[in-house]
Image (cartoon, rainbow, N blue to C red):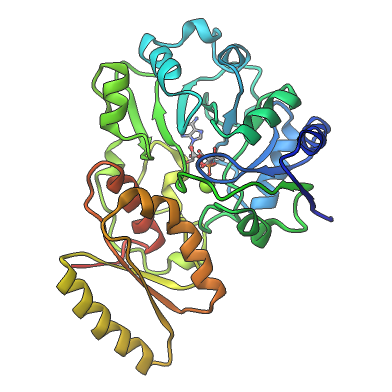
Length: 344
Ligand code: TXA
Ligand code: MG
């Protein structure tokens, strides 16, 4: 299959929308990461997303919408049935990097939700994404546009690295602003529960909706170091998060990633010691350091991991962040990239 390169022009977005309407796959930029979109209501189209990504089929998709009313055909009982705090979150934080999980409407095929009776929904902010969904005139299922297990793509080039020849088209937009995937919040119970942390933090969400928000327990528990994270999606049996996607090893570049925590001196000393050891073994080491700036780390982490792979590094030493605010969310991704290998 030849993968079309499209621009963000009106004409090209219309073309992309036609492809989606006819059951094809189009990668597109959002403010978080690039998504791989298909008609969320077309089983065949959704199956081809799983195929293109090599993704386990119990890992559900996020359904992307352009207007609040689009919830009606996706959520059990329609938008009127969602909780008051979910309505408030939608009002204050949509469009934006927030995904909410609701009870599913029977109209949503079970392949889209990985067999669950809930559905995850997001209204993205980026202009290209919004006009694509509007033009298509249907809800767009879109996981991150990477081969399963690899870092999410935040540039069009990174999408092509994984997906060229496997999908119909890529909308070649700019580098994504946020750089890590949306915050996923379960809105089906009495208290909202964060299943995947993102740039919209727990504190931000609590302030927006005026009620307490919890973390899914699995986010607070660090599983033991997983021996071979680079082997792809492997479920860790002792680690059962409620968001199916969170149980697979994730975000792994080809290089081995090791996190180093502690002050600047400790980091410097460790990098020196371990870097020399690596070179003695004939390996090429790299260093990633974001000066404690969690937003910058979010924006660049996945792009940097992919770039260092392209440059042939074998081992990447990355400086850990304080697990506060956005730092908690970035560390969630870093820890997975490193297979929970952390030196402190
Ligand atoms: O920022 C994002 O969310 C990007 C862009 C493209 O919008 N999308 C994205 O999709 O990251 P994906 O498929 O890579 O991650 C979706 C996450 C997975 O962890 C999945 O398990 C979870 O959302 N999820 C989806 N549906 C769910 C549901 N019904 N219940 C619980 N978790 C769900
Ligand atoms: Mg993903």
